[in-house]
Image (tube, rainbow, N blue to C red; front, side, top):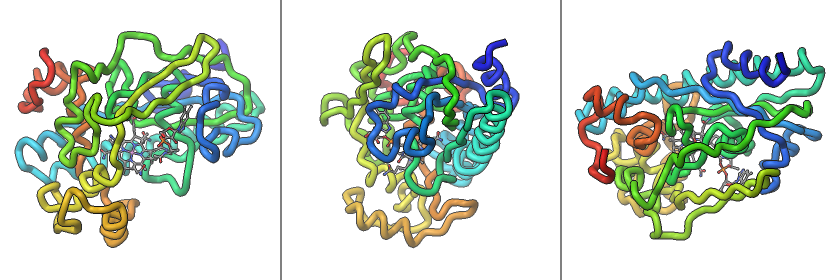
Length: 302
Ligand code: B12
């Protein structure tokens, strides 16, 4: 068995659903300070892994936003976001890095994931795309054909030169000219609608030709107002800001004063609508046909 296949099998055995390998050359466009070689000099390959988010966990977001059961959202926070998937990823990328070092003799560095990160790290989303796991959705979250945006990613950097996977070239996973569900459900209008503002463009240099992706402009200040629940109408305990037009400084000050259970300084799981309502990844079968969600905006025809 090839070393690449044995790494993928090992990743599956640690509970990961997807695993792909990118050559470091696909990170040529990464901003200074976020390139894999900034964290591992001589890095030649980036292994990206994904763990799916359970349907039974995602549906708690619908219980909150459709049934008014705000407490259910904490299940998403724990099992779909800050605690369980992140710890699972931390354990998995650590074990895979050990496996790579033991079997190849080359150095392997596990990277930080999600809210367990401290400081600037590599972009897990870009690593997943570079490793061929999927492509950017308009909401800026990475879509995989299997799970849509309902995955979380981790990555391992290594000086081993591994055979790369091709970049994703399957069916188009997001067409913002036809679907505007994410921009419609966002409660703070943080995601620009298609054509409204200049899209963010990222270009991957690849031997098979450049791959270009456009995604929306995410107003991170507005996203944080929803994700942290800074207003009562967004599921917060108090109105920590009084307007959706609060400035970045006001939002930062409100977040700084928050306390959250678990390991985060502030709760960032109070929203997740762009991830929960995105139709890619068998949404209809998983959430509409089951009755878990009743109120998808009629933006596209099923
Ligand atoms: C901080 C953070 C947040 C903050 C954002 C704060 C901010 N001002 O950025 C908040 C709390 C708001 C947030 C919200 C959410 N987040 Co978040 N977040 C992160 C985190 C931890 C770091 C993001 C970051 O700063 N990365 C570092 C910078 C350098 O990377 P970047 O922004 O992705 O890249 C930009 C550039 O630097 C450049 N670039 C960087 N690298 C490269 C490489 C190449 C080759 C190129 C060409 C360009 C390029 O391009 C980008 C545009 O300029 C990541 C984990 C991670 N390490 O990636 C998760 C992560 C992005 N989040 C994730 C998720 C799921 C969410 C939420 C859905 C959570 C929720 N609330 O329910 C929302 C989604 C909001 C949205 N629509 O985007 C997932 C996305 C999974 C997916 N399927 O794509 C991630 C990847 C965590 C994970 N381990 O899986 N998040």
